[in-house]
Amino acid sequence: CDGVCVHEPIDCDDGNACTVDSCSAGICVNTAFSCDDGNACTVDACDAFGGCSITPIPGCCGNDVCEPGFGESSDVCFEDCSLGPFLLDAPPCSSCAIKAGHMFDVKTKDNDVAIVSIDMFYLYGEIAEVWTRSGTHVGNENSASGWTKVAERDFSFSGQGSMVTMSASDFIQTVFIPAKTRQAFYITFPAGRMLYHSGSSSRSSIVVEDDNLIMYGGPAVAHPFGSRTSPKKFSGGITYMSEGTFTQAPVTASPVTASPVTDS
Image 1 (spheres, helix red, strand yellow):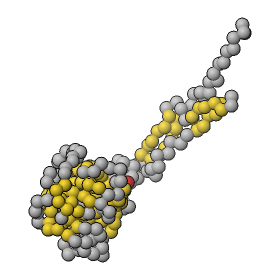
Image 2 (image 1 turned 90 degrees about the vertical axis):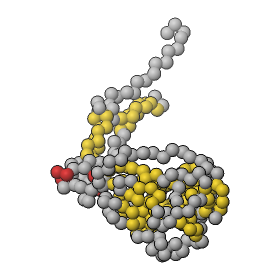
Image 3 (image 1 turned 180 degrees about the horizontal axis):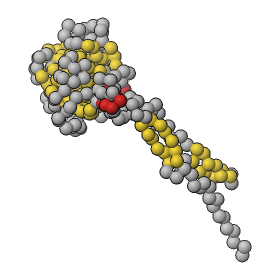
C-alpha cells in the first residue's frame, strides 16, 4: 500500500427510493419510510424508483377533490367543495382605544361559511380567547350562558401593537355558519389588552362586507363578559371558506402598527 492508508467509504445506497440509507459501525442500514399522509381518503404508496405517490380515493369526502359525479356538493362535503380561503378584512385603527375584549356580530349572505382564522390587533397580554354563539351578542354581553369558547392561543412573544392571528390549529372546533344567519363573536385577552377603533359606531353599522359575509359594529367588553363601551368598530379580520361562487379575489392582511390613545 506504499505506506499510505486508504479509507474507502462504504456505499450503502440500495437504489431504492423508499428507504433511508445509512451506515452504522460499518454495517449498512436501509430503513423503509412511510408515505402515509394521515388522510384516510388517499391511497399512499411508494415506488422503488419514483418514491411516494398519493392517490385520492374517488368519492371519499376529504380527498381534496370535489366530485359532483359521486354526489358531492358543498352541502354534502363542505371540506372538498368549499371555496377559499377568503379574508374579510376590517380596516385597522389609526386612532385606537384599548380594552380586554371586543364583541360583534357577523351575518352570512347566500352561502354557508366556515371560519378558518381570526386576526386581532394585539397590544399586550398572554392568552387570547375566542368565544361564539348563534344569533346576536345583543342582550348577551354580560353572561357566558349560551357562549362557547372555540379557540385559545398564547401570544406572549408577539410584538406589542401588532396584528396577530388565531389560526385554524388554535380552534377547538370549527365555527360553521349557515347561509343568512347571524353569529356573535367575543375576542378577549383575560390578562391583556387589544386595540379597536376609538370612533363611535352602532350595532347596525356595517364595518366591512364582501360577497358572503357582513361584519357589524359592537362594544368593547372587559374580561370576562364585564363592563362594555358603546358600539365600536372591530380592528382585525376573519378568514373563511365559502360554499358558493365568489367573485372577489382572496386578499391577505398587511402588518400594521398603531399607538393606543385611551383605555375606555
